[in-house]
Length: 232
Image 1 (tube, helix red, strand yellow):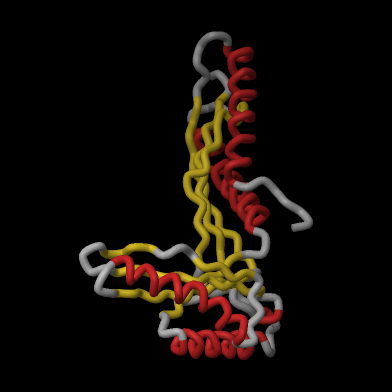
Image 2 (image 1 turned 45 degrees about the vertical axis):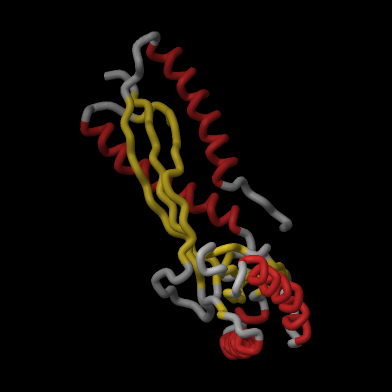
């Protein structure tokens, strides 16, 4: 990752520093009296091309004993990565999760193998959709051979943090205009930012369709900003 902007936790930390700094300014400007404040929320959505895609092979095992079920599960988890690599697939990441007990009474366990692929080749406007469909077909055939269930694709951006930072910034801009209007309504003005809270930050796999040649995912965010007003 060549450039890396602060993620939500880092953003919240910087916002806290900003809030403390603004509070110190307010104390010096207004004396000991608590300054008047106004709270405003803003929402924004930023779209991003897909950088990676993830699939999961899931298989459940039931045996006469839980120990036997775990043994079958472990055998599958050891063999599955070899089968995936042998199918002429080149995932960026391939990992097997430890056996998970899903039912004590039924001696049931679950095995999960996750594969992750880069989407660069599949984002080409003309050939990408067909190539991606071919990949999905190959994975589905492999799942049948492995007697496993293949999950739907889960998309992610190549660089999530810059997109999330852009969402927070855009949401803050959306929060300012109604706050400014409310301040003017009470014959005041915004003096400083007291605090910023990132209320929500969600990645949407299937947002509203956007113009373009390739599928996009979206990051939707909501912030709550508290502004300090000038004295009346």
